[in-house]
Image (tube, rainbow, N blue to C red; front, side, top):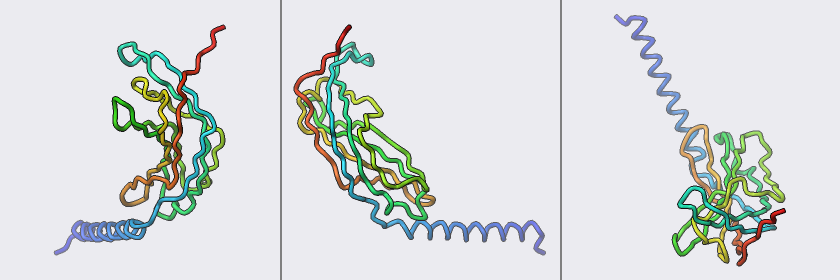
Amino acid sequence: MNTVLSRANSLFAFSLSVMAALTFGCFITTAFKERSVPVSIAVSRVTLKNVEDFTGPRERSDLGFITFDITADLQSIFDWNVKQLFLYLSAEYSTKNNALNQVVLWDKIMLRGDNPRLFLKDMKSKYFFFDDGNGLKGNRNVTLTLSWNVVPNAGILPLVTGSGHVSVPFPDTYETTKSY
């Protein structure tokens, strides 16, 4: 009574159930693993310019430039269920206009097999550090934090913040551009 197609269907359904159980097992073995590691961030240079903002009503906005060093050993994060890490350095600060500002300054994708030891020296921001006004001038509490998304083979995408950050004071004056 069972045709070849019904037997193939049963075999396919059973195989799919086994694969789903194995995928769940892969996820559950690393789901509760601690993914935070110590991170050292040092800032060597901070400059500030007041430039024309071309995105809005032609007002001037603060543009910050940061030179930084990052040291972190991410070896303990990589296990057999981690495909890659998406690392990013963000700056958080508050101004009169906004209680919380968050700006991504730098990012990197680290694949499994890459060197997991991060040792970056004299790095500059990859993205512009614009404020939507003049909130960076004289701001004493701009906090830099390294965070990462863990991209697994199976499971959820955890967002992890490194255990280490640095607060950077911005200058009270703008750097002037030299015209020749």
